[in-house]
Length: 282
Ligand code: AMP
Image (cartoon, rainbow, N blue to C red; front, side):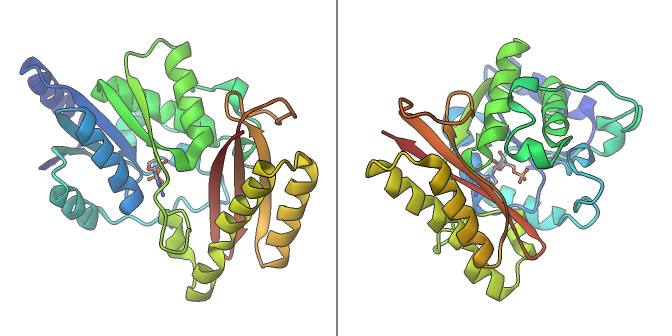
């Protein structure tokens, strides 16, 4: 396995493997890899001949008071892990390559219809940052398919819509949420949690399971379920952002006739902003 840094080098590599008749999967990440990322790698390996993992901490998706500077950067450790998992190539561009004219002077991609809600409400530039960098990565690497985690469900929906709307020639594949033994969704930001907070953190997934069970038993008072979960999380030391019972198709508030639901939740605990979700089929 090699790591390349330039557009020319990754394009040369992809052209060579495609010329040999091989299919290419891309797994975009911000590094500090954990078993959640490796689930995506495994999925990518099942579906394509060659797997490329990109590692790039994308400043554009961080708010001014967020953790861009302190975001964990563990390149050597990540490369060792990817080598162990038989990844073929790592693409690790610098910001100069991704934003050649600087962050204040570049073209943006905004998926208006799915932004401004859930995570987009409290993180105004977050999804524009993601849609923009993912478009750039797709244009640079030109993979046949790309794998994203269902943990970031709104992100996955935004990327699917962007690919459809912009006719991008790449198949988007979702991979299920990888969790710790306690049920906590794995995340690079879990490293910000103290030992005590790590124990508490599993309450987020427990609240999701509790609400799912209530809905499956016929409770359709979604407003009350949402309010109760938020109150319970706040009592337990979280600073909840949202706990929204919504339709999976368009991420809008679920009504009594909707059958394919998802609960999206976000809450801060100590220095970490945690997100999680659970799908419900009625
Ligand atoms: P990140 O490095 O946090 O930007 O994540 C890169 C990719 O890994 C995204 O597609 C995430 O949705 C995915 N991912 C992160 N954590 C998990 C997890 N616990 N389970 C599944 N996918 C994940």
